[in-house]
Image (tube, rainbow, N blue to C red; front, side, top):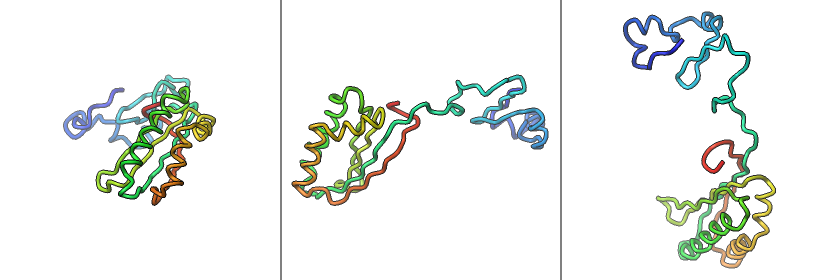
Length: 163
């Protein structure tokens, strides 16, 4: 059974025949499920189709760090140079372990930055901390005192760009 578009449900014969107007008991008997504004009749299905992205469970999750930084205003230009090198080297020199490394600047607070780092697996995230470009970033942080605040959120990316 195919569903009408949302606009078609409000008037005429489509409104009367709409599965949205049926009682829950009827829907349970007909085994009709609503997924992303589409009706799916599954009475003949033996199992859930795994090709639908909304029903697929991720096989692996990519470790992702979201680092929010506040930098001293007089050190912003130096910070950008170091962050750019760290991002470039992470993507080029880590043998595909770093899937994504974005450096974002807050549009309202020009000395607030966000690193968005996504790795293939936990081993790649650990390897990143042993690289020369990460050590350069660590030394910049420790020697200049440019970082006023740093907040790290550790996440697992389950779908999206880079996966």
